[in-house]
Length: 176
Image (cartoon, rainbow, N blue to C red; front, side):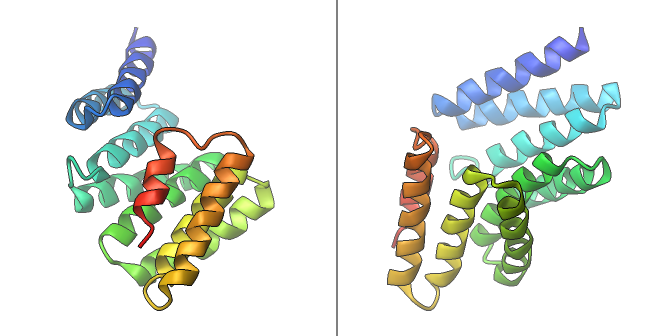
């Protein structure tokens, strides 16, 4: 059953990521994406590319350009199929990678769209990530103001009860 294989591989990839085995997570997400391609299921292709891009962007893998390509593809699919939640997720993940690649103008452009979409949807998780990204951009000229915005993002995660073991360290690592 390809559907079950796709879901299982993605969940195993998430588990591997949470256990810190990022190369294994990337391998599992790549396998899931291949199944999505074979199924010709655009939503699953988006999800597969998104997970793969996130794994590729992890410092233990460090394939940031490949991650940006995966996440740009996932965003294009999300737009094509009008997956508004997917668009918000892909924007967030792509902005993260663009900041790592120091592509600040592209990140700023996408961040403006992301902020608007997250506000319109009242997506508190997305708003927290927007604060992190806005803070990272601000740090280039005003470190203290940038750090304050990132701390506001951490506070937002705490308010909604998801300052978990994966995201909080990502936010804290952005502090300078």
